Image 1 (tube, rainbow, N blue to C red):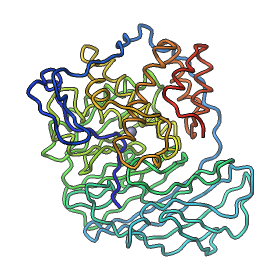
Image 2 (cartoon, rainbow, N blue to C red; image 1 turned 90 degrees about the horizontal axis):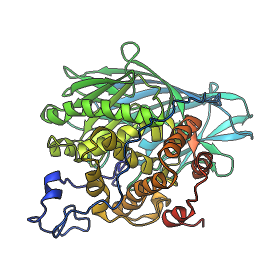
Image 3 (cartoon, rainbow, N blue to C red; image 1 turned 90 degrees about the vertical axis):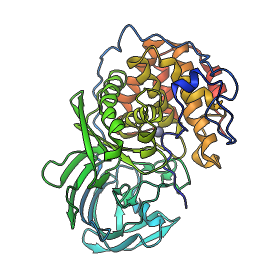
Length: 491
Ligand SMILES: [Zn+2]
C-alpha cells in the first residue's frame, strides 16, 4: 500500500513572481492546477488582520497534575548495513481508566508490511503471554490477570525489524543515504471511556494514529556504521546514545552519513536543521526561519517545554511531524528559491507548529484531523503575519485560495478517497475557519483562547468539545453561522 505521510498537504511549487505576473502561465492538465490559468492572482478576500498591538497576556495557568503516563524503555541495536534493528522494549502501563483491563491494545506500525516485524517474545511481569494481530497493525496482548484501575503492569517485548527499503511514499525505512525510524515500536493506544481502544486502520493518506503522551528512555547502538554517521533524534542524547524525553507522543530517529547541520536558538530551544549537502541553501535557511517560527508560536500558544528540535530532510512526498523532530521532503529544499513563499518555508513552519498541535495537545488524527491540521495551517499564517507583514497576505493566495477549497472541515480521513479534497477541506477551509473566528471574536479573545486551549489540553487528547468549551469561556460572540458553514452536522 502506498502510504503518503501527508501531514502538511503538499502543494506544487509556485513562486511569488508567478502569482504577481501570471499572464504567460498556461493551465496545467492536472486536477489540482497550481498556477493561475488566466490573468490575475487570486486575491485574498479576507482583510488581513493587523498584528495585535497587545501581545497575549502572559497569564500562565499551571497545568493540573496529569494522570500517570506509560513509560517506554527501548534498547535498540541497529546494524547499519544489515538493515536490522533488534529491540528490547519495556513498557510500564498504568491503568488510568475506570475499569479493569483484560487486554492491552498496541499499535504495531511496522507489522503492516510483510517481513518487517519479527516478534520474538512478549512477557507480562516475566510471564510469557500471547497476543493477537488483526487489521495489520492492531495487536491485542492478553494479560494473565485483569489490570485494575490505578495499577500498573510491566511488559517486555523483544523483536527484530528488518527495515524495508525507504520509498518516497513513506518516511520509515532505509534508503541508500538515510535510515528513518518512525513508529518503530509497539505502543499502547489510548483508551477512551466511550469509544474503547482508539486504534484506527492505516489509510493511504493522512495520519491514522492516536498517540497518548508517554515517557521515553531510549538507547540506540549502531554497529557497522559508515564514517561520519550522524543521528537526528526527537531530542539530543543525555549521554552517548542514550535519550530521555518526557510527555511525548512519539520518539523518532533519522540516521545518515551525509547529514550537514545548521543551528539556531529560540526560547531556550536549540533547533538543528539536518540536510544533505546538495540542499544547503534551504537547509541553512530553515534554521533561521525556524527560530522565527518558534518565537511566534511560543508567543501565541505558550512556551514549548523542549530543549531540542530537529528538522530533517528526507526523500518523501511531504512533511511529517514527530515529537521533537519533523521531516520535510527533499523536494521542498530543491524548490527553495530564497523567497519566503514556497513549500519549504510554509510547510516547514507548518510542521514545526505541530510541536504544539500534535505533541503538546494531542488529538484523534484519524477521526478529527482538523483539530491539529487546521491549527497547524493557520500557524503558517501567524508566522507570515508576524515576521513578514508586508507579504503576509500573499500566503492566502499561494496556500489557500488557489485551491478553491470546499467541504466541511470536520470529516475523518476515511471520508475521503483522495488526498487533495481532504487537504482542501481539513487544512485550507480549516485555516479559513480560524481566520473567520478570529475576525468574529477579536484578537484578544482569539489569542487568549488559543493559549488557554494549549495550556488546558497539554499532554492530553483534545476533542472538538474541548475546543468549543474553552473557546466559549473566552467569547460571548455568536458564531453559530460559522459552525454551520464549516462543520458538518452531527451524524
Ligand atoms: Zn500537518
